[in-house]
Length: 131
Length: 194
Image 1 (cartoon, chains in turn orange, brown):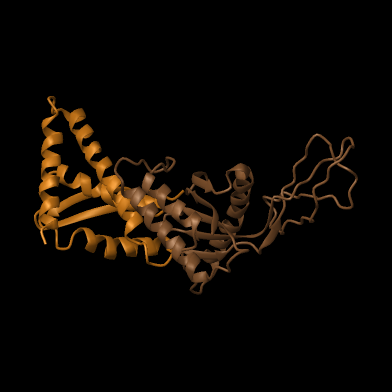
Image 2: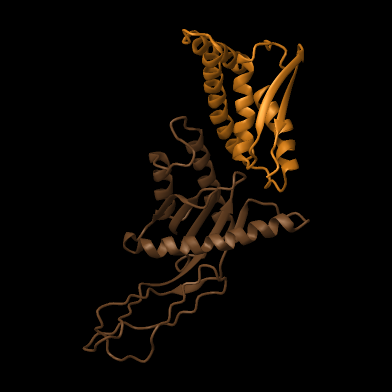
């Protein structure tokens, strides 16, 4: 199945396009492109959060939501390890948005950041503010 | 046959409401609004119970009732034997008490006129998705007794169509649903039993 390759190509092109449109690559401009990418990931994450848990039972607590995130969502989106990830933040923005969107549609407002200590390990940190 | 179908967002405002006899829409809006209280009660009860019953389908929300419309008109009503009393209890979960009345006609002043509009049994069913979007369906069950499975399959179709609407990139979550495919699916549910 060529699904994963298609998405990788699309993702690479999206990042390249958004990066190139920026004539002034100062810190302000970079942040705009990143937030656009993250916004796109957010919308896709919302749709995924609606579609994937369709036949599963109702989520009772946050723990259920996180379990769903780690198992079902991850397997559905990334069938294999993310070994071809670059260190630039640009390539992680979409994925952070994806996680944030899925969590939002399941009722949890959060802030997702990514950090890469050493390839191929990438850490996503999900911060849920207590309110 | 479904008489009214409503999709209600997480923040409890309607994303989509449609009912078949289009002249009494406000009445259906009220019905759906009052059903929301029952839905909320079931959701919170589900959260506290330790046992299973974590399904998305909530089942029959309200006991069936005869529903009569109470219209206060210009006062052309003969003094009849019974007068309907209408208690709109949106916060109160006791069943409404309505009495059967007949239409009156005749000269009189001041007293209201009552007509009965719906001599059928109307049942309300609820369903909640994982994203806290609620579906409420009002069904006219006088002709055929719809079984539970059929209601469940109708809700499943609704959920599938709603997911398709969500995945449409031109749809912003939180807007009213204006998709033609969704409309067609709802129309097919209202005309015939699925």
